[in-house]
Length: 480
Ligand code: ATR
Image 1: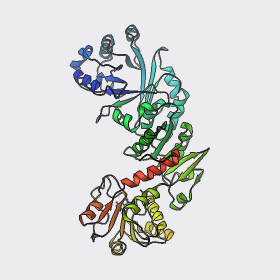
Image 2 (image 1 turned 135 degrees about the vertical axis):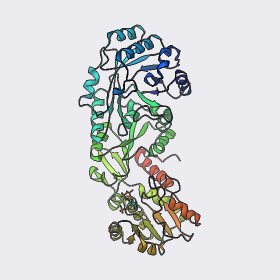
Image 3 (image 1 turned 120 degrees about the horizontal axis):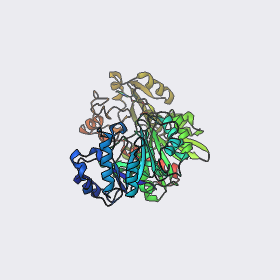
Image 4 (image 1 turned 180 degrees about the vertical axis):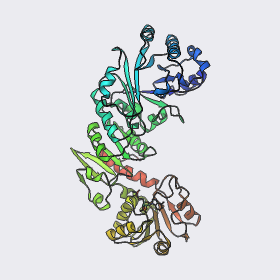
């Protein structure tokens, strides 16, 4: 298990003590970043108290901190801090070579964390470098490196796994590196850092609440099974909450993490390396992932999109749970779609999965899309009507208005004020289904509801595709 360490970045010592009290039960230790303190506070470090072990850190601007004064003053403050007896560890950067401070630390039983930061990427020989920066066997080496793309993420994990059994603190910064913070126990990192709610002391820090509640961080061990989700952008995804809470309720030793990547093929190497057992796929990789897999189901072939990949034996198998997630809530809320006239707005991957499911239910379909050629392609493939998202389309829509389904990203941030069919007047008898769930009620749904239409958003769809994935990943029903 790795420890959860809260980074304190207050301006005053009294506020820092309050933070320690507030988070006492949710973290294992603290890092006191005194480079955030007002200068006048620095002479009162002996007033700082905490019931948990604390790392004393005085970070320079060059290493991602706030301190820009002389090295002499920094050493003097660190030395005074160590002597207070309030700190279990002191963080000294690799270029801070001071036998004097090492002697003071040793005398006061303060362990040295020897750190280096790379904001440009993952150094080639990360594992070797981590081992070589230690100035004595007692020091704990620490590396924080920026991970900008899938290739660097793969390089990071390759290096990390070379030294999985050695004492170290290792983490990847940035959105793509976020998963390395969650998987600290997997790579043998002594701790992972986090920040108080609403603040982020470094790129990729989240709050202890997120780590404890969404990820059950303190239950993750080297043996935990890894599942995840690939996509870009991904940091808003709700899928970790769904899957991880399912594991918790059923007592499954597993963790589900986001991988914000830029290359699905490279991700497959990461999946092999980490022994990932299954992963969800979201925008924009639902089609691009298909050639990377060993086999796919018929629904994936027909829809041309895959949102679920499971490891079966040595094979990667692609399935599609989107269309089941899409159709079940609609049937529950609306009833049978047999013979109903349904308009689908959009002609992307989500539209295709929707049309596939609607066809299976016997609906008659009109596809409306901004780029009419794409609507035409879908119409040919699934034998439906089609039109552009224009005046002609609206005339046709009046005849296909039992159910209107919105599958584009229009209505989602940053287009939350746009309704893609704002020139269509609802009669009030249409059933409206928008697959967006954030915001809860898009402009399209809001306008329809004001005209008396029944509405459904994408929340239930998100849950149901997740439940189906959960079953494919674990073999168990999701504990609703
Ligand atoms: P997804 O897999 O989520 O469906 P996609 O395949 O990229 O994503 O498809 C996006 C859909 O949203 C397309 O139908 C797109 O219309 P175009 O084919 O004309 O690009 C539609 N879309 C995106 N932005 C739009 C906008 N501003 N107005 C209307 N439609 C839009």
